[in-house]
Image (cartoon, rainbow, N blue to C red; front, side, top):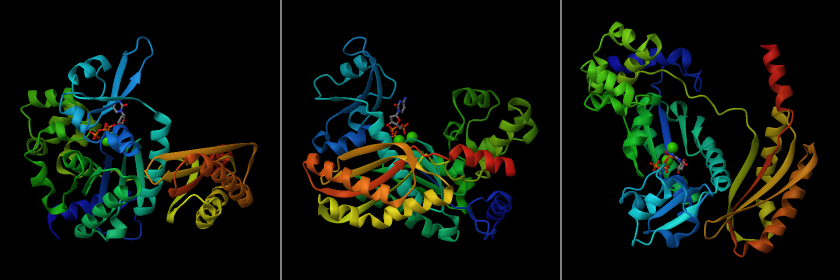
Length: 387
Ligand code: DCP
Ligand code: CA
Ligand code: CA
């Protein structure tokens, strides 16, 4: 094993949250980020938008066009439209280009995001969501530290996103969070970048320091003043020199980031606020009995999660993804929290029944979610007390 890899092993040892049983595997860390997320969700829901500039807008309501752009698809980006730009300006840039301006529907994106995170969580060893459309993951164990297998897993995550959600994403895989994040940025849009441990440092060396996670314009110009422009130059800087300029913590981080040896582990997502399961139906249907029948394992696994975490729930939501990939949901909230299988199944069956009458199309995938979890606070305070 070469020196770089050996160093990775020693670094990850005490901190390898996801794979305690196998201390000497090289870490395999991934970062996934959905492409032009809100706008792509709108395209999936309305495929006739493909090829047109699509702009998701946050209207402030003052005048008809006041507000800012939340995000835009790549067609709109070709004309310089980007997140944070005033809507009026975006409209000017897209004049005569048949743009579609869409009101942001945060709740819809959140439902889809939660579902994606749940799906991803089932494909990797540890998942750490870091935003509505992105997450770090650890696949050291399931790949046994083998990067060709890691590449195959990256490919299969990408295909699963396309197959299940109709969405493209970008993935980076490497030996640390910084390397993985840089990979997903470079792979954008729609790509997969695998940075094998052995070539990490030569791969990073020629890149600008601004490519590193956490290095913004202020740090970049401070580094430039010190004569440091590339990551390779940063990697060769002495620790005291960096620490005196940026402090011990950030100075130390910069050096680790530049060598791809940042050892921060992937930490499983926060305390859950909901449990859900979603399945692809064996055939497109909207027969509520058939749908709930195929969700019987799913609802059982929700119950198991509730029981093992000592929680009860107030709300049941059913989710249907129709044959045109649009998403429909229906919920019922109880006055007091419950925690039995019958409440989940009977409520879900009634909600699917209602949904099937209004949906207008067959279901391709179907899911159940329980939320409004109770018992969370008691649990946390108890476990904290015991600690
Ligand atoms: N978002 C927003 N306002 C911003 C930035 C982002 O409302 N200033 C929302 C809309 C995005 C989502 O968050 O779709 C995810 O943000 P990203 O930065 O990942 O950007 P996109 O997914 O839109 O584009 P990319 O393909 O570059 O990742
Ligand atoms: Ca994104
Ligand atoms: Ca993102």
